[in-house]
Length: 340
Image (cartoon, rainbow, N blue to C red; front, side, top):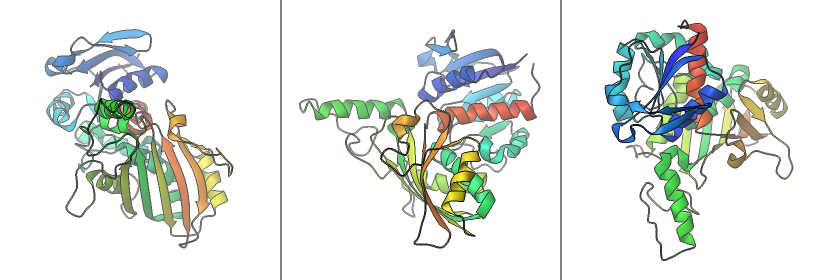
């Protein structure tokens, strides 16, 4: 007994990770379909020890399927997610399209799993932005203890957050540095990404924020607590996979760094690696392929009352996207859906 599961966008980075994680976590699947656009029709993808051939998203009938994990952009989601939902298939969407819809729950299972029951309003659940997902996992247990007033976060986001094109551009530009005759000007990014950092992710808004920064503010409020003040600076860095964040937290009451460390060690989804010595912290290359959100560099902030600083690292293709979507499916199955 299990669920009939569809992965939409199965040939992309996140779609492939969804298939991998469904198999790794032994999600109860009775039948699975891998969907892609017509140009990728017939492409082979792996699901555990099975090889699946992609089917055409445009002609696929979602009737009788239980869960659809969407890993396509907002435009395609706008077309196909309502069709799937209308057929009774619950959509778990990785795009930004439904995140701010009041009738669509925005879920990080370690933080607000109870909100999953709201899926029935539209038969859709939203997956948060990758940078938000790992941050709220770290914030939640601390917020429960001392109530967070304000968060100041600077992100160091890998190029995989921009998809295969972003990863290819970093690779090609890095090679071209050593071969000046083979110049690779920016295409996916606004400036050279190799050996550089770019303080610009997504479009600029009128107030000077980028949309990525705005997402972190809006999503943290929706997932965790609308009263928390958040300000973010989001930066693209020349790392292939793994987002990092330097987070400054101001609480309503005092929280000692030792207690904060203990709380985080016991919290779901978190691994604390925090030794005050050379290498006693986690970097993005070390988190690739892992489920955990890693927290290091936990320390008091002496410049404000009730302040803590920490360093947070996670595999953005996993916790920031595919893993979180599969975890939502697990919660949905445990609390809401019956196995076929």
